[in-house]
Image (cartoon, rainbow, N blue to C red):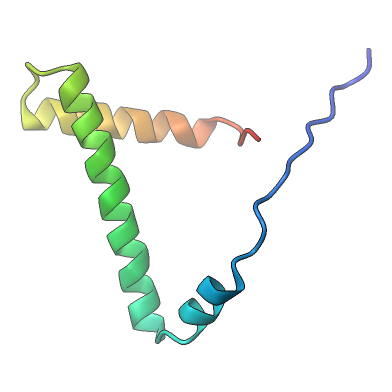
Length: 78
């Protein structure tokens, strides 16, 4: 049985964005990364709250952890 070969395509590299990031100090790069993570987690938390309006903050956080744990076990998709 032949295995399927997955073809991945990547967006072109944004040279201007790369230069901007390269000009940042290491501390500022980490801060930008943490800010982006906070945005993504906030969006996920909002989606969960909208889907399950009756859950407490604790329950929403548990669902968020569950989603993040599940996402790590999946293979990347194109």
